Image (cartoon, rainbow, N blue to C red):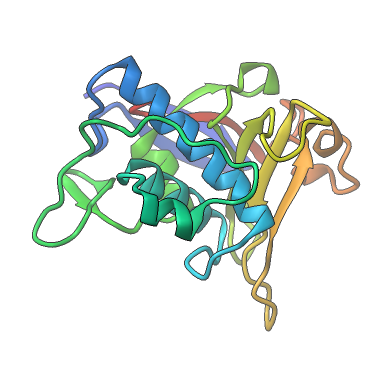
Length: 218
């Protein structure tokens, strides 16, 4: 098994090349999954759902719903005004023992739940430490060792079907903070690179920014 070591902010993150649970049939299914994942992550900013309570929850929700059949009933429940409909993934991964274990969590174990670090460590690959490497659907991963919740993910949307004023949108959930439950926010990569708190800037000079990651099956 080939591994690579990335050091950032004092963290040694082992990224394995063992496959994630998901295997998509071909580029047609990969493109369909990516399109749904992007629009569903973006939609959380406009209509948040109860299952998204932190940054990893946003990724889990978008992926899970991207892989489902998008029936007329599903569209009535989930779609928003202006939200497009794409082709379905023709061969989504199978359920196991009544569960849908979409994420590799270690070794050969898979589960429905994965936190931010597990998503990155076992289910994604590094594509660079510059936003120039990002494609819509990629994840931005930040790690600050001293934080109560050290790992944080953002989803790069790129052009948004809900807001055509820019082509570099990012969505993320802030996560809970004490008594506050947190919220989904949307910003431009251009503005995030100038964030007043330097630790949130997705630039190579920021040691907290580990890099841009792509889900392994995409």
